[in-house]
Image 1 (cartoon, helix red, strand yellow):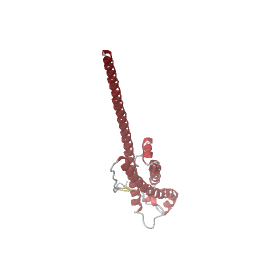
Image 2: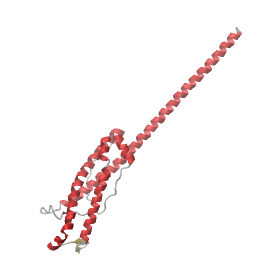
Image 3: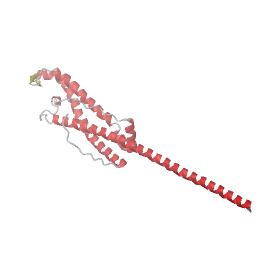
Image 4: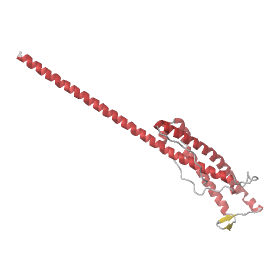
Length: 230
């Protein structure tokens, strides 16, 4: 009998030890699993914050693009509004001053475009090349300024204060007619392209803001502002 009691006590001790080990292992597993789950959640939050930052970077760049195109459009509209009614198809360049300082280029990064693709594939397809489209338009404005300046610098001018005035007779106008025609054509192209691109830029900007609001629970609200001519 004494041996049986000792055996029972030993078994009970083993069961308690085994039970404690199992419980400890279960607690450790639960804590570890919770730790892994929290790490995953933290990683997901970091990825979400990173995507949100990239999206807001894109929004800022798209706002610059839309603003620039709006300014260029107003500059051209104001210039063309000064055209005499009988001079709508020739010597337009005389009334369209070049942009004094062309805005800096904007370039979407690969990370920003990847984030946009994950956010809205259709918007990615429409907006992805728009930085290059805008930069190409700026190149056209720069080329117009170079060519127009080259022509005006070759003409005789009289100064009225700090303003130079050029008056040409019929013979002089005929001499510069080919170069003038080479300026009138790009003006027409600039007007059409700027009109189209400024409208498209505004639409893309609104779509991007809507996508960011939906994906990241933001409350972005864009309101058009009046722009001054460049």
